[in-house]
Length: 75
Image (cartoon, rainbow, N blue to C red; front, side, top):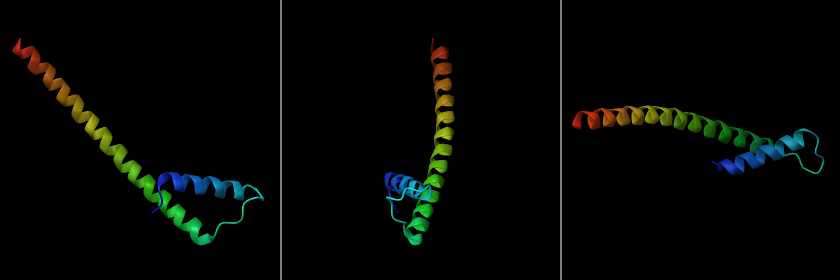
């Protein structure tokens, strides 16, 4: 799999070619397909990580509330 930077760079170049930039040669269909597969994989990973971050953020807020309650109770 390509890195996110490589995927973004290729897709930007592909889009420029698709929009008529005649200085860019047509990319191979195999490369286009592989890069789209990589982009989909990266987006799925991003989505998974984003959901995980939200869950961890909520868990951290709950922990912080418990610390506050315990600190108040200890006074």
